[in-house]
Image: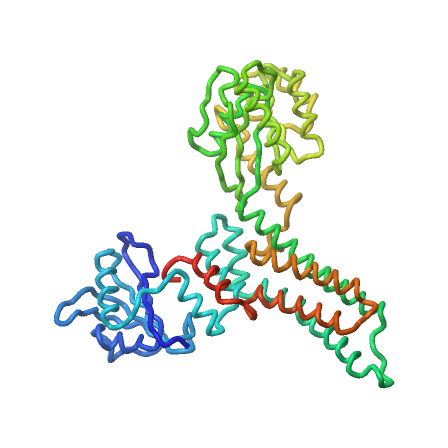
Amino acid sequence: MHEDTICAPATPPVNAPIAIIRVSGPDSFAAAERIFSGARAVKPREAVYGFITDGDEKIDDVILIYYRSPASYTGEDMLEIFSHGNPIIVRRIMQLLMTLNIRAAGPGEFSKRAFLNNKMDLTEAEAVNQIILGKTQWEISAAIEQMHGSLRGAIDNVREKIVLLKADIEALIDFSDQDIDFADTGEFAGRAASVKEDITDILRRCRAGGRISSGFDLSIAGKPNVGKSSIFNLMLNKERAIVSDIAGTTRDVIRESIIIEGIQLNLHDTAGIRESKDEIERAGVSLSKKNIDSASIVLVVIDAVSGIDKRDTEILRTVEGKNYIVLINKTDAASEENIRAVENEIKPALRFSAKTGVGLKELEERIASVFKNEFVTLKDCFVADIRVIKLLEDSLAGMESVIESAAEQGDITAFELQLVIDKLGEITGEISPDEVLDSIFSRFCVGK
């Protein structure tokens, strides 16, 4: 337990109906007795109405809840003060608390204390931050599961297998001169390979989660003047890209993010692909081709009015083997005969109008279907940062070394297994240097 007491607003410094101020540490209840009019009625985990006072002056009417250690978020004595959400009031209460030898908390300090007091492990603490910062419903849902132990459970399961494996190796070393049957080399290698597969699976799920969090790249491609920028603006529901009848208006890749069915997509409006003598336009076309190559999915836009030509065919050839959707745009201005002519050459294709919005809902459904079916099973992914992924990669490399030395089953193998156990322990925080903890919790907001 910490000897000092900290305080911080847990809500943003904006005018709002309610603001929350948190206090945590051994002097929490004493602070309530000094500044809260209803202190005599305070009982653990019960809301009490009263007002905050500074001497004879009433600062604000509040609701106060007291949490007695260890039954609190931080594991320490805690107060939560619910005041009116005027920043002037919040600042005044904070100033009053600091006159009682209570200091202002740093970023993430409440969660750090919760971790140090064994109220949560590091995977759960990082999930708390992700719940606050998540951009999509998937991130929030995955973070809530992780806050309740999904990643920790997977890590603990693997660690337990490795601990048993190490115990068998050490038993073999200690009792090698006695007539006791131990696992043969083949069985040991098989168990080590199984652990390696488990770590590989967790790493895959963490990488997929990281990819979902950062968003998938979706490139809108086509020859000039087919309506790429209009489609880009329609999907964003705002005028972001310049729309013009002049071919070659878009010279660079324009990027914006949207959310479709809980998945973040990074839309890329690319320069129209064609041969050009303009040096800047040629550079834009080159960049467009690179963008198409790296995109997770490509929208290939065909002009329903002019129909398919050689340039369209070349663009379709470049996306072969990739996930792509063909849009027949400008259907509002094209004849049925022209539209069917395009459909006969390209199947499947989606009728679309960037001008009227026809086909937008179906496009979003197709995009979501591609990502959910082709890329990831959302429920299987973890929310993990580069720290966790690096530790898993190191653990995987360690198990590969163990498998290579399976025939020896000696001190070196036991040592390599312990290294893997320690790496996995760093993920949950059982083994974590102070500077690592400081780096993790410094990314949290103040008051959490």
